[in-house]
Image (tube, rainbow, N blue to C red; front, side):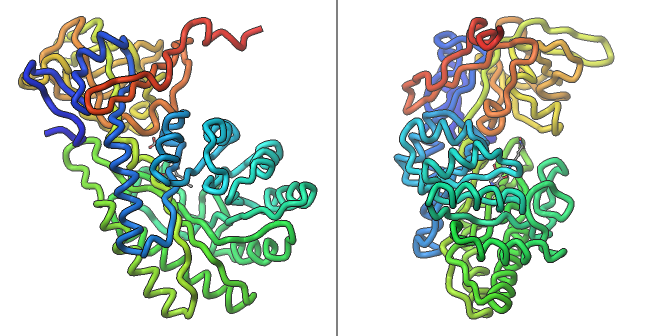
Length: 432
Ligand code: LLP
């Protein structure tokens, strides 16, 4: 009935998340607000860890892709669960380091890291910097040799695999701003250059084929292609990698009809491919890294809003306006993303309306969803938009100078604030 396992309905007919009554949460913490179920997040991290344990002898590391949702608490949770993290900017790196995240287990991504960001990563001992292009390779080598350190790197490769997902979130094909292309020989050239650089230790290659992927075959194909490249590199240079980073991209359920791959299934199939290909090519079994982002936090989060105006335009549509919008969730405006929406205080009632849920930004495209089935709502009702844990808070803006929402973490019915609500003073705090 619900797209997320941590959602239910209590005896009052109210929607619950992690056993907490969302209507009570709305009263206590105010709306709009993001709410996460901590146990769901931890369970997902463990499921990924166990899948490496069960299928690949534990010879790997789950690196949560923190672009999906980054704040101090999520890095603490990852630390406690024994996973690594993937960061993609100085800001994410700073936040991870600020809670004492072990730098060796940080993977630093980005297609245009600045020299300052590289300096910060090297200075703090980040375990793997994923180099995107030759300019960065040279800059990083310079920074590493000036610091007297040997820096662990991986190279980001575009394996040329079509991931059957939304055009904007596809990344593995040749026409992408990320990484070195395989088909053109660029990847091989980059490897040859990297292995001559004395201050860099090339630990392996990385690929990420896209996001919100439901098919398992593109992942299998990517592993196969990457190991083919490992073989080619070994033949041409004698160099053999210790590691292989296969990225993230595992789809989650936003609406009925979405069919995520069970996490165990992914590792089972991909491990089999890695085993078979390494054997075929006479390579050593690499240490595997995976970078799930959305699948760790997406379905663990929801957003609570209060309904304001309900505008019925006869024969056209009904707008239900809420106290948030594209500033806290730009995904409908950007990707036409689908969501399941429930009236939290009428969760037991039948959905007998079809509505457009609109935000409060000064923009017609500020919609959370069109043609959404919903209970009969009126001003003051609480709406819950499900599966907003990934790429909502992390992609939020202050458009219209709207303060960012707080993040509430629920654990077995107990709720705490892990990110405070912004105030108007905070929004204007950098203004001179
Ligand atoms: N690793 C790399 C190198 C990535 O670029 C990404 C996502 C991930 C891992 C994690 O992918 P995930 O497991 O979350 O699918 N804003 C878009 C998604 C952008 C994904 C960017 N890269 C959205 O809201 O759908």
